[in-house]
Amino acid sequence: MVRARPGPHRPSRPPPRVDKLTHQRGIDVNGSKAASDRARELGLEDLRTYCWHCPIMGKHRKQFLWEHHKPVADMRNEIYSMGPKVRLEEVAAILGKTRIAWVLQSEGKKLGNKSRPNPAATYRDAGVVLLYPWDKCRPIDRKRHRAP
Picture 1 (cartoon, rainbow, N blue to C red):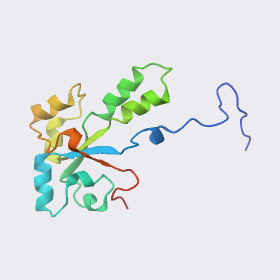
Picture 2: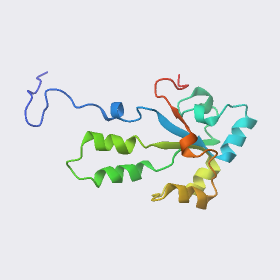
Picture 3: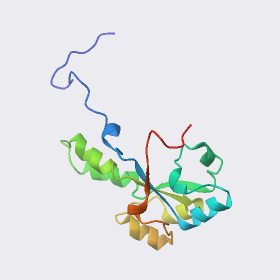
Picture 4: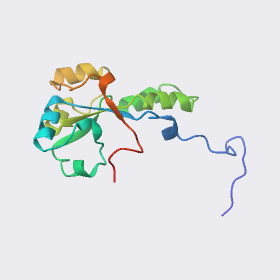
């Protein structure tokens, strides 16, 4: 295999990965009141302590949905709108604001997959009540959550 030499389009060192710059304090996780009530019925702990990869949640995937508060498509469009000379730190700032809410599958259908210019209003209009204000949410540490 022939390796390309560093040049104007091939840096000698790869740039830092976006995932190392984002979620440095974790991903904010919330839960709807209905999803939290259902979780309690199933004997689960506070939904804010679980992530999509947690084995216990795999058993309940048909009931719960790991919903991005602001859809990924909206974040992607925000990044694209910055133009071709966007800096990695700017991308990381947008991705670092990722918020997740555990909701019931039925609530996810009400929210839909459309753009959400105002996520809080979309949740309110769909009748999805989040249990905690976002400043009271527990960020899941990417290295210490309950994943296998």
